[in-house]
Amino acid sequence: MNNEFKVKRSIEEINKKIEKGEVVVLTAEEFSKLVKEVGPVQAAKEVDVVTTGTFSPMCSSGAFINFGHTIPTIKAYRVWLNDVPAYGGLAAVDLYIGATEPREDDPLNKVFPGQFLYGGGHVIHDLVAGKKIYLRALGYGTHCYPRRTYEVEITIHDLKNAILCNPRNAYQNYNCAINLSDKILYTYMGVLKPNLGNANYATAGVLSPLLKDPYLKTIGIGTRIFLGGAKGYVIWCGTQHNMDVKRTPKGAPIQPAATLMVIGNLKEMSPEWLVGTSHIGYGCSLAVGLGIPIPILNEQVAEWAGLSDEDLFTQVIDYSYDYPNGIKRNYGIVSYAELKSGKINILGNEVPTYPISSFFKARKIAEILKNWIRNGEMFLTEPVESLPGAKLFPMR
Image: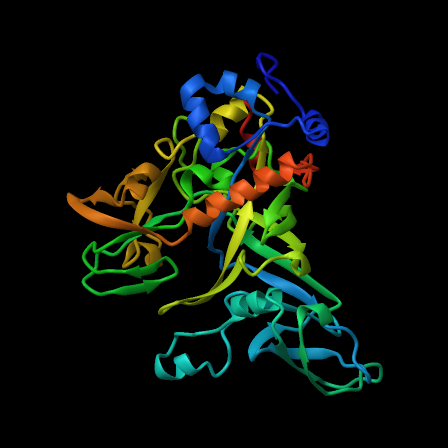
C-alpha cells in the first residue's frame, strides 16, 4: 500500500469504533456529495465506512436445500418444488433450485411458448415468505435408500438447511441495451422497442457496490455483506468475472467487469429482498437485494467510493444483432447521470431510458446497512484473500 497516504486506517480500527458507537457511516450517495464538496482527503478523514446497495434481477442465483431423511429413506435423483425441477444429483436429500428454472406445464407456456409465469426464483421467494411448497421426489431404490417416491408439503421451517448460494451477483457495471431492428425484442434486459424506441439499463450507478471499489481493494473472499435482507458473505468471484476491461481515467469500468459469488442463510432472509420475477419472452429470474460496506482505508479508496453518476459510464449495445452474435462494438458511452435523466442521444436520436433495477430499493439497502453498522449490529470483515485479478491493479 502507498506509504504517502495522508489518511490511513484499518478494518480493525473501524470495528473498534463500531463497538464504541463512534463510527461515521455514509451511504455512497451521501459520500459522493461530500467528496465533491471537500475532496477525497478530507472526506477520508471524516468518514469510516461507505454503504452501497443494488436491487435487480440476478439470474445466476439459487439455493441449496436439504429436506431431511424420510422413513424409509430415499435417494432423490429427481426433485420438483411446486412443479419446478430442482437438481438432485448431490446426495440423498440435498438439492439445488436455480432461479431461472421454469415450472413444468406452466399454463402461460402452453399459450405462449417460451414464456413462464413461475420458476425457481418464485419458489425461493415463496419459501422465504413462509408459504407452503409442494415437494415431489423420485428415487431409484437402493439397499440403504429403498424408497422410490416421496411427496410432501413443506415450509422453510421444515427444512434441515436452506442456503442461498448465488454463482453470479452484483455485476460491476452492465450494458445499456437498445434495439436497432424493426421488430420488438423480449430480453433479460426487458422489452426493447424497435428502431431505438428505448434504452434499458440495469445498474444503480452511484450506489452500485462494485463500482464503489473498482479494483476490489476492500472486497474479497470473506467480506460480510447485506444479502436478501440478512448478513451474507462473498465466497469467490462470480462466474463471468473479468477485471481486464476498458476503464475511465478514474478506474471505473466501462464494460461488464467483476462479479461475486455470494452465500447466506435463506432462513434469515426476507421476501422483500428476494423476489421471483417473470420476464416476457425470456423466462424467470430472481431479484436480489445486495449491499456491501466499503471501509475508507485511505484517500484513494475515498476517491473511488466518491465517484458520482457523472463519473460512471457504460456502453450502449444493440441486442437485435450485436449482442446475440458476439459483435464487439458499441453505439456510444453514456454516464449514469445521463441514463437517470430519462433520455440519451444515440446515433443522433433522443432515446428514452428505463432502469430494470430499482434505485429506490438500492437506496433503502444502503440505509439499512448504514444503520446496522452504526448500531453495532454488523462488523466489517478483513478479506482472507483478494478476488482474482484484483492484485493486478496496484493501489495508486
